[in-house]
Length: 293
Image (cartoon, rainbow, N blue to C red; front, side, top):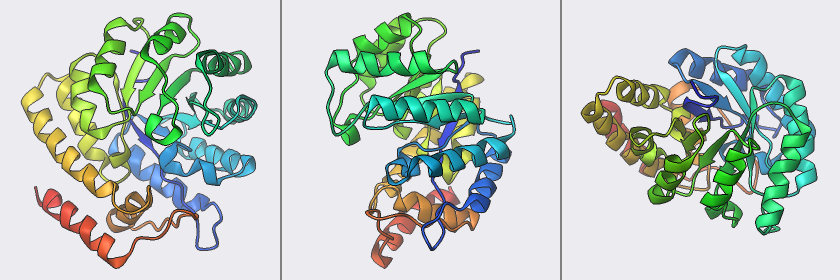
């Protein structure tokens, strides 16, 4: 089995009405997801609003998730930052807290060239002993992590996995075809989960699993059993659902649905704004038929 495999949930971050990290509800959410069978948890990913949090808050949140997971699911802590120095220090914090790995998005705002990207991941590798999952999200960061550089870092053992949120299946297949045997490819695009697994990928970091973890877990299980047709039906359902997550300012829709489904309130920090009444209705109009299905 690969280091990263299965369905990982990029956790929303729970803030209370005063804007503080809400550890109690965060841990309740983790308990629900573990009970639902997710294989891993990723606090402080893009869905976790990590850019709105300082180092101490990020450490507090990571510790709370690791404590609640208690080995029942892997915890891969997002340690992305604009600078290499910050990513290194955050990765050290995650290792000290007991994380099973770190997920490191490409630097952003400053747009490094190939040498800068290579040095970024090599610097984190020198700083920690736990596995590293590289993370490519060019639509947010403005920085592409080229497929050939991913393969170079994989061959050298600098990184042990990739979360690819480019949404490009051709790129995914290129990496999957040439990656080392122990390397893990996980999609960050929910609509590509089945395709990636069918073609040799190891799973996904699935945003929708914050709301309906059982859907993604069942899809993964069906494909493990070779039940492709049933899995594809479930994939189409997941793909329709992800339209709801794009409404409003990311990740406000996911937080609204977590409250609707799980009864756990998660405020956001500006510039993320609460959804309007019209946006909430639009989301529910998409979701309710899927719940009945």
